[in-house]
Amino acid sequence: MVKQVIAVEDSLKEGARLVLLGSQNAITGLSQMVDREIEMTAVSARQIPVDEVPDLFGGREEVAVAVYLAVTGATEGHMFLVYPPKTAMSLVDLLLGQEPGTTQELTEMEASALGEMGNIMGSFYLNALSDASGLVLMPSPPAVIMDMAGSILDVALADILDESDDALVVEAVFSTEDQQITGNFLVLPSPAFLRQLSQTVAKK
Amino acid sequence: MTVSNVTTIMVGLGEVKISKDPELVLACLGLGSCVAISVFDPVAKVGGMAHVVLPKSNGKTGERASRYADVAVPLLFERLKEGGAVESRCVVNIAGGAQMSVALGIGTAFKIGEDNIAAIHAALKAKGLKPKAADTGGRKGRTVRLFIETGKTMVSSAGNESREL
Amino acid sequence: MPKVMVVDDAAFMRMRCKKMLVENGFDVVEASNGIEAISVYKESHPDMVLMDITMPDMDGLAALREIKKIDPSAKVAMVTAMGQQALVMEALKIGAMDFVIKPFDQERVLGTIKKALG
Image 1 (cartoon, rainbow over the protein chains, first blue to last red):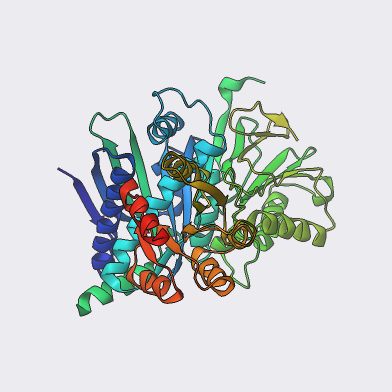
Image 2 (tube, rainbow over the protein chains, first blue to last red):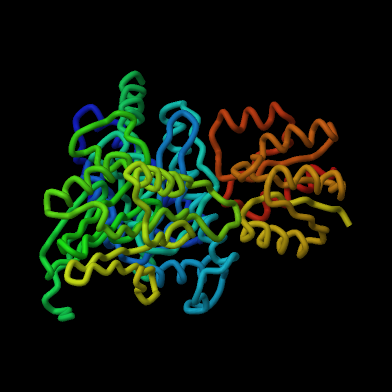
């Protein structure tokens, strides 16, 4: 049973629902890529103060592995996949078909595998939104970063802080059935985009 | 220094804080493109820190405009002076402004760190001030701490020992 | 041996594709973005191209356009996670001979190569 929370202002609710569906599609993409059952265990769309966003990654100083993709095309936005470092390494082992525990650091090939995973998830997410809205939405090539969560988020949060003190965060938590691998797929869509999505849905 | 008596006060995104309490540490955690300005007047023993997020306010004003370098720097010094600091005695350190993306060799251009650093230098220059030390740029995140008791600014990165600026 | 050019910014994808292609008897050359794809195409004259879309410096659709200018008979299949209708239409319009969605089944890609090589 997936826990679903939508806590955004009314004008953004329909758009938020679409984004949740998009996140579900992102997880389908991951499942296809690793050829395993991946479940979405929780999904939420919330407006939270910008300085609380790092808590979704474990806290500003928490070291995390993140795959970042920018959204371009009909709108701009930010997408992140976030994992604790150990989980990221396990995921790499899965992707590279290696014994769990083999990957101990992220050099080029490992980072590339994670980046490609981010590319597939980000693309699946955007494909779902594109189908629903008719808008063309493209991901940037992925960037893989392992560092303190606050530092990874700065660029995306700076973008938001130029306009607002609140961030719209859509977060999908997923895991393999054996709970060995859990991660977060986070999207920070702009309110204008959600409104645009909501209007497109209303017309259909 | 008795570590157990020290309380850390977070200086969050866009905040400016000052203190004269020797038991306090002002800190900016997990700086990526953001830049911390750490200032201390060793005579008045008052210190302050600003967590700069963006370079130019483009005319925006008020409390919330302190996220911009061109507002944060003058505001920080104004608050320090209210606390008894004299500008010419102040020791200024800056840290942060990294360009975070790494690994895939595709160089995603996050120039905002660079722009923040430049804007801070410009705002300091406008006051006739120069930083004593600038631990800026690069590709790694930083945590910056200003110890009011000693006036020392310490910088650390994930997995590294902290070093004094 | 027929030669296939694999164009993808992800080293991981290039490695995977190369392994699959070599195991199936193909010669492989690689490029990591659109600009490299054009120069490698000119140098190596591959019989067929597997082209990603989302890449830095020059994306796959732009590279497809340039390669078709150099060689109107070039056989290029897009291989991408970007399955949006508008992009599929544009790729086919520019002259892609197929559009494979990632993550892909080996059979799907080998099938399109077979089709391209006739």
